Length: 310
Image 1 (cartoon, rainbow, N blue to C red):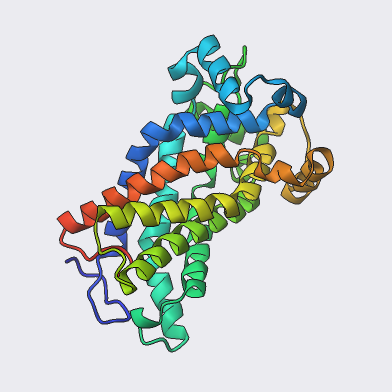
Image 2 (cartoon, rainbow, N blue to C red):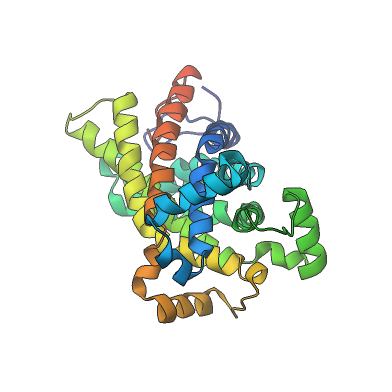
């Protein structure tokens, strides 16, 4: 096992850089399969409210329209794919890589004796903190992904790809604009990370303590789905605000801040507007988290490492 200190139980742990690379690579690979759902979610969220209400079949009908008009690859799979892979590599790699260290530091600070005293509050706090850092670092890539997906299908597009977006955004809007929406993204990302990691770590801990399941693919997939359910519910409001705010300039809509954007959404569409896109978000992250959990745990086992969270 690679050097990298010990857990609060005295067990050796792999280095943080190794965990970042392994988890980032697994998640980026899965993104190749899930990008169509992410693109559909973004395009559905930026669709004018009246147009969305008039779409026959709702979200499914909208997806059919896109495929019929533009084709699956051009309309849903290719837009923002590269930026999405880089964003996910950074945010997943960092938050998964540092989560055990942050969790164990919080446990040590409270005088905990280790794994036997792990609780949901500590797991949630560790997930929140690791998520906040990782999503801030990934903000430019997420913004590129979101804006490339939001303009997919437009007769005239502002950006030819990720590199062109970065150059155009920095030149026309200023370098600081690459961090536009960082507050909403960090809020959304930290809540998603809190739900994912607290749900996954908590479900694994609960199942093993009670002898319901032992380490293995079934436990990893089940715990991942529990994390996805909690993550989607917590992250949906920030997700909607982030998408609306980051794409505002391209739609010639002006918001003073993410808070102003949230207030405008509540006034024009009501409270449920913040959960518009919950289903595509869950349908995307559910399989993603399940595939990631099984794949990452298998990769750790092949590398001779303890199960994640041990």
